[in-house]
Amino acid sequence: MELPAALRPGDTVAVIAPSSPFEPVLAWVGLGWLATRYRVRFGRGIFARQGYLAGDDSRRLAELEAALFDPGVRASSPCAAAMASRASRIAWTGRGSQHDRRGSSASRT
Image (tube, rainbow, N blue to C red; front, side, top):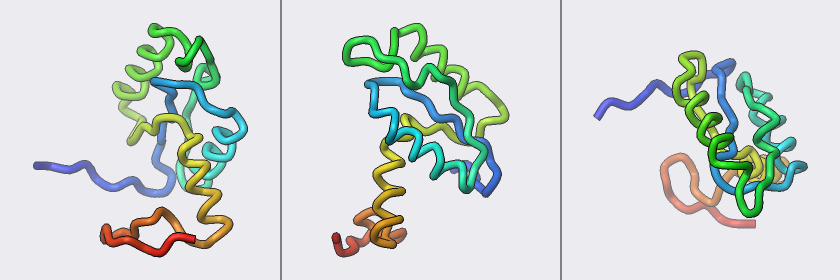
């Protein structure tokens, strides 16, 4: 199996919302966190809401296709709100997720 090269600082990351909506404040925190290392690309459509989804099907599909088929995008990340919770944890505790890079469990705070 061939794996893609790891992301490097300055690579372009597309942030998309292909499923459910999220809290905009958390998204802005997540986008800011990503922007400290990467070029972040996103459309205002990520903030769309239609019932329990982040906009209608055509909006979400177009956004996903644009991220996947853009040769300038090195990675896509669904909704930056998930990133915001991790960024906040790192900022407050100095630790990342409950797993370190080797996959072993690290202590929780």
